[in-house]
Image 1: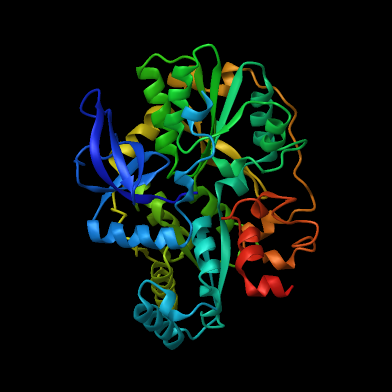
Image 2: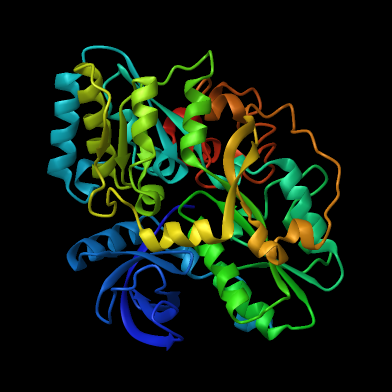
Length: 90
Length: 365
C-alpha cells in the first residue's frame, strides 16, 4: 500500500496560491488529478512519484519510465482505476 | 522460480545472487518491513534464489494487516449511520471486523465507497453538503501526508462535513517492538523505501545504534531487493551496524520537508494497537487538537466496545518473524483470501496472501 507510481505532469490545473497546486498527471496514458503541494519545485514535463493522489518526489525521466513498465508488468497500476470514481457515484 | 531473463536487469540479478553466495558465511535472518517488498520477493521468486543461510521474514509493514479489529468496527459503525458516506482504500473492505467487514456493511446497504485518494473524499464532501463524508485514513508514514493534506484542504475551503478516522502506524516504533521482544530473531532490517521518501533516514540512526542492527533503506523491484539484502549481509559479515540507503533515487537523507510539515500540522503522535502485535506506545498518528473538528472519533462520539482478535489467526507471530504462513494450521484450509481469518490473508501485501498466491512452497503444502 505504500506503493508510489511515477507519472508525467501534463498541466497545472489549479493554483490557489504558491503551495496549493494541482496538476494533471499521465500514468502511461491514464490521466489523474494529483496534488503538487509536496513538490513545490515541480513543473510541467517533470516526472513525479505519486502516492494516493499526492506527488511525493520528483524523479528522473528514464528511471520513471523503467519503474512504470515494471509496475505495469506486475499488475501494480490497477489502483489507478478504483471502482467507485466519485463522478460515477455522486 | 522465474527465468532470469524476465527481470529488468537479468545480469545484475545474477551478479547480486553470485556475490551473496560468495560473501555469506553464517546464518542470517533479515526482515523486510514493507508489505510491498514481501509481495515483490515472493512474486518474483527471489526467496528461492537466496543462499540457504539467509532467511527472509516478513514484517508488519502492511497497513491493512495491522489495523486492529476495533478500528474496523469503528469504520463499520460510521458507515452504518444514516446520512454517512464512508470512503476507504479498496484493500480495507474485506478485512474482518468483530461482526462484519466494510464490504458486508456495504452489501447490507451502507454507503461505502472505494476511492483512490483522500483528496477525492474532500471533493465528495463538497458535492454532498447534506451528507457526512468520512475517510478511513489508514497507512504508514507514506500515506500520512496525503491524509493530513485532505484535512488541510477541507479546512482551507471551510468544508465542515468532512472528517477522517485515523489509524496511522509508524515504522520505527514497530521495529523497536520487534527488536525488544525476548524471542527476537532478526539480524538486519530492510527499511521501507517510500516511507523514507517522506521521513528520510534520521530516525533510523538511533535504532541501528541502540540495537546494533544494520538497517538498509530498500526499494521494491527485484534488483533493489537483492542489492538491499547484499548490503545488509555485507554489514553483518563485517560485524557493522549502519543505516544505508539502497534507494537513493527516491530517498533523500532529509526526506520530504513539505510532507513532514503537513504531518506535523495535522497529526500528533499517539499509542496504537497493532493487530496481532498489541499496543505499541507512541506508534501512531491521531488528528491533533487544532484540527479536532476533522477527527471522526470525536465528531461522532464513537463509543463501541473493545473487540478481541480472532485467536485462530497467528498473524502476530508471522509479523514478528517467529512463524511462516505455512506453519499456521489454518493456512490455505480454514483461512483463504476468499474467507480470511485474519488480515494478512486479505491484502495482496499480507505475507499469507502472498504465499497463498505465489509461493511454490506454499502451494505444495
